[in-house]
Length: 463
Image (cartoon, rainbow, N blue to C red):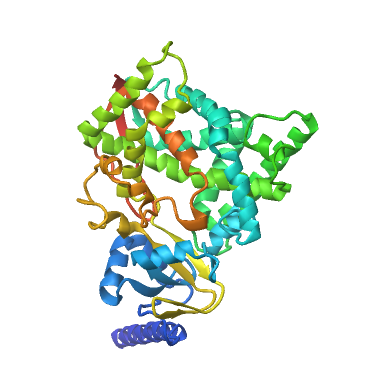
């Protein structure tokens, strides 16, 4: 009798789950939509997307084609793996498309963050950000700070086993704090850093506001960071001393983009957040790829040793001319970003019903421009799974129509050149001071983030 009851309960449970799945499919079965599956109510296929990553995408593409529907990160979503469609979406924001990042990211990064705004507000925020990361700003204000920071950050790595993932994360955050507000250590840094890490974790969580969730922690971390930055802005105003950093520029009279305090704070959080993951992960993966490809390392090192040999004194900093001479370094950074796929894609949201490649996309749906597979397209990159920085020297790939590593259209990453400058400065001092070997045994994950869960350890010695 008991066994029969268990079997009946299981049967009813399966029946209920099947009905629930079917109901969710019917709910999103509007005529003209691309084929695909929607998964469970509320959660959709988020678990499969995050756990299986590229394999989930390839499986869906094999079943439904390069454009299919799904429900991920809390939103009904059209996934596009078609290069032409992706280019159209990125280049035509004014035609019924706006940024469509997950609600958790918008809530935690702020309503004035550049990924959340569009139209005239986006033009203002983008202009303000471009002003603080312009070539002139990099040359005169930011590069000297970066050089000073990198010298200090890499000064005591000799004869040590270090976690390069931890070191590059620390590097990306601390160097950004120094450029933005002139601090990299001390009480403010100690208060800010743990809150920032909670904020990062919260941005890619489901927007479920319950105690103990990453979303709740991220929201609280944002509130704490706002308090710290409000206090810093107040102290700056009270002192009436203009500092030579990004915050100083935002608050100065010379800045033609007049932002209120809320907008300034959201831009600071944006710069910290957007640069942190891309700069740290690209730097770590560059170290990995250089270790695995000695000929690449040799040419990169020769480029940087040549720069050092031209200096009158060994301690002279690198300057703007040195940066422009780092052509192979730039190629290494691009190839690292391509092969490691630091950014898998971008999200847009429809503001009206629209047609896309013969399909009808309802108002309010997300379009996930999935660019990962484009990085491995053999028609664009010969031997796409080979680490080959020379491809960026031989071909004009940076201006290729399908070069989406830094986004595209009016959403091209405003901090692209600053990020390249930071990684280039790191590599300059790393390869001219040290040689290294991997300790071994560390696992690298490629999705949803490129990371080493237990760290990525290397044994460092003097060059």
